[in-house]
Length: 357
Ligand SMILES: [Fe+2]
Image (cartoon, rainbow, N blue to C red; front, top):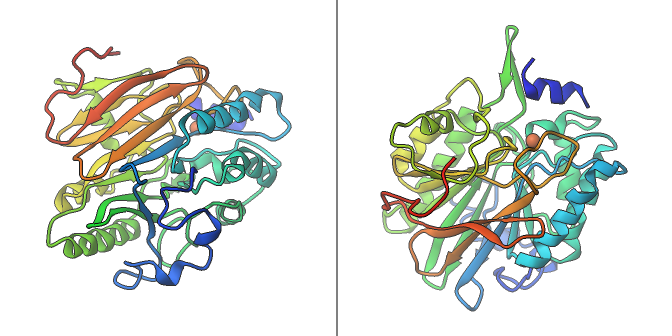
């Protein structure tokens, strides 16, 4: 039995947003540029803070269970990460909960974000629909938490949590963040495994990507893709003989068995420069493979599931207006930043002086 199968049975700062505060987001969809030229889903627009920075806090795999003592530090971790980093946006890359009561568990672990008035979006994990709520029901519970900016699921587009977030300067869109719903499980005539990003989602991504490129005078807009289950290229990358990575690689990437070509599409369109996943609790690495960064978040949960690389925490992304690439680092519970990296896709070697595993 695979470890994951075993697990399954065992158990704002506000200033940076284009408008101030979360309340101002309500009912704003019609005004959001970019909505009309792609489809009926709005693009969520953000702007840099006045100091030219923008910070995303990535939480992942909180595996929270309301009323379960083993989850207490997960909540404490989320609070510490928010109060220490004071991000402009939180992206949770899934496995938000790990048990019933499902709705209460989701609300409790996300409430600290709402309490601080920070906008947040989620890309659901495989476990989020393992319990008493369907995937759509769980998604709607999350969308009702104040500050959530996920848009409704769309007919014909696989999954629920597929979203586009843009970051603009006064000159226009400088960055795009794509959130994909990487699903839960597949069962193809008895062949079981993890789900993968489907062709409807790839088409949806391509439509947005091409529209952003067109609006940018034909030049692709640097982008980052966030989702829960890693793609096969993570497995290929860790076996690359010239492996170029930083951080913990303590677990084989548990991707789907099937490669639906998402990365090939990223390469063709030339905009996505980094993929950010969760799912594998004992990995928190940054890997450069080709001209793409394959990144894991830092496990943000507690002891409801396996975790073997020390304190939970979060990953942070910091963007600077007009500057190529981005900074990313890990923060662990009760600690200072680690693995502080300044990444840009033209760099050939990212790890001088960094510990390798
Ligand atoms: Fe997980």
